[in-house]
Image (cartoon, rainbow, N blue to C red; front, side, top):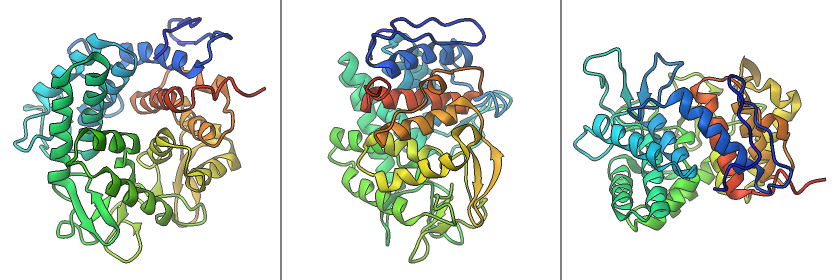
Length: 355
């Protein structure tokens, strides 16, 4: 990650002023955004706080924090977040993390089930950190968690090898239309990297099933994926018992796919075309059967996802929108930093190579 050059952070609005000479503009913006994010959502102990969910923390938030700290070369923050995560969430016997920690409850962990995306994020962050700082122990921890994910959540289906969202509650005998999956749990760049780390991590099979499902699990007039998908039939369908919508979970699908590669324009263009109908400032949750737009998603972080997709399709996004890290809650702020990281890593000249 490049050093933060020509960026000025102003208190409150966190406005970022860009250097015209710096080629990897996204890396600069991401570095500045991380400072704001760390101030707003990371405690001194290393707990990443979801301020819209009652101040809870979860394995997902901890994994995101570790990933951002590694990308920013912030070893102190990474170590604090990992220490807290290991001490407070890795209380299961199978090597996976309990998914939810609530400071208002005693004990704080009231549900010991895991969240597979949180486990993957933590493992990926540990792997990257081990590589960056030459720490084989961190890579060993990453390998252990990745292999536990496969041992406990991967199952064979007629749609290929898939990962269940958690060890309990999503399998064929646990929901009427199970297995039920969440396509946002296919963190494509993490899956590929963890496959390089461990021969026991079947990245090729998971990549194949993930891409296949993204091409098949498009619903309604907008042809968007559902947050939760049933694989009980011959074809994927929105899962029973969940809102049939493209929402706050599925918004991560194009983020992870574009972060991995620009080689899937047939999938990524679906999202870009839908958002262009209304303008990225009018992004929203979409009811799938009729493509009705429901709750608006106005925060800059959601628009940053759209900007990343534009980069993956060889088009320049709105740099002003990407650099607007104004006040927003934990989740869109997280998507914002991740999108900037993805642009910096995969499309480093996207914001400068156009007239």
